[in-house]
Image (tube, rainbow, N blue to C red; front, side):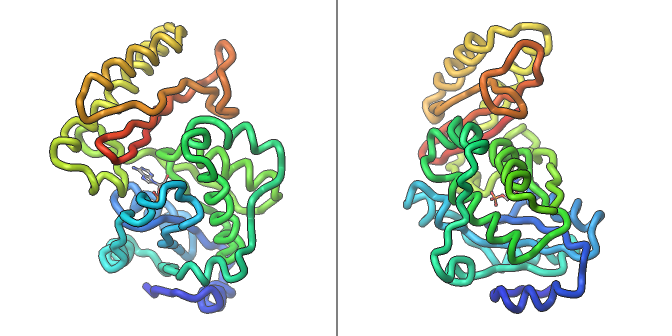
Length: 275
Ligand code: AMP
């Protein structure tokens, strides 16, 4: 496995391959990230994982500053699952000329306006910018994204469609701790007490899912009840829970498949999950 910092070096290494699998990450890797890399390993000739904490997607400066950075440990984990290249560039390598990769296409706006987009202004502009730039650099055949970031996945799919890119987007299941908490790099920032109560988020999402499956479509009441339960806990404060159309992310029509998405502050750590 090689660790590469420079765009030109990576491109030189990849030039001879036409079945490249790509996993973009911000590092501080856990089993969720590794599942993406393992799936890419099964399906592709060459696997590239990027580790880049993208400053343009952080709307909160403190969140960016304290985002965990563990490149040495990340590299060991990636080597253990057979990754070929770790691309760990500097900010200057990714944004040499402040070029913007923000999509102007209006069809993407309804997806970016809701949920995470509403609570983290500019976040998805940064995500689209960095993923567009990374796709241009790596030129992957397949790119792997976790369902953990459900809205991000929907937006990347749309971006690929409107930019007419040839990359295939592969969604990967959410990997959870035994107690149900979705794995996240931010979990390492939780105190013991916060970590102990965080699984309540997933439990409440499951409750909503079970009730919807049983035919209860009073989404606003289901959401209200879940918020009440979660907010009873002194460490937890819901930012939103929404039941949305699984594709458009808008208010669901009758009999459409829905996704239940949540963002909850656990102390000062922001956790997201969905079912
Ligand atoms: P991040 O490093 O948080 O930007 O995540 C990089 C990729 O890993 C994204 O596609 C995430 O959706 C995915 N990912 C993060 N956590 C998980 C998880 N618990 N299960 C599955 N995929 C995940």
